Amino acid sequence: MAFSYHKGNESYAVKGGCIDVRYVVLGPIANNTYLIDDGEGGVIVVDPSAKPQAILDACKGSKISAYFVTHCHWDHVGALATLVDQAPAPVYCGRIDAPLVERGQRAYGMEIAGCPVSNRLEDGESFQVGGVTWKAILTPGHTPGGMCYLATHGTHPGAPVLLSGDTLFCGSIGRTDFEGGSMKSMRSSLRKLGKLSDKTIVLPGHNDVTTIGNERRRVLEAF
Image (tube, rainbow, N blue to C red; front, top):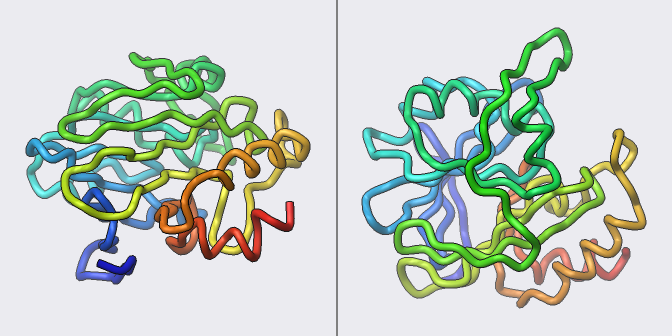
């Protein structure tokens, strides 16, 4: 099945991948919060940015089996602590950014509560949640410890799926001018993602869903 995505009444659905994915757009800078069917009746919540009740409602009564954090910035973890309190589940994050997620932060007048990280991932580490096998890919550049997540074995046939956070966007890359950012590191991270197959579906932290093949021509080769 070819890659596609469309907007339903309450969320977007992504088709053609090896996992079933929906996402909602939340928060003041329009973050994509992904809801992934783990194949065993649970939902993996990725980068819970804001409005915890809206995220719980979007799960439609399914139990949350895990939380994935791509990086430590406030707009990707704004609802994390509240959700973990209301719907406990393991939190996965890259080892380098994990202390910043746990510490909490203040941004634009908002207090973002810290949240314990139960699973601190290393580059290349494989792990399983429900019926889905994931590979952690360390991609510094936007933050020192940004982590992408690649679904290598999903719940049904389909293209690989990459959660790219704020490393790779549709037609662009994440900013490197924030504290801890590095264009040199970003270039290295993009070369790493460039080794993935063209059919890999890319789920970025903001803006439209895309594929490695689309971004190879207009982004990856440019950097």
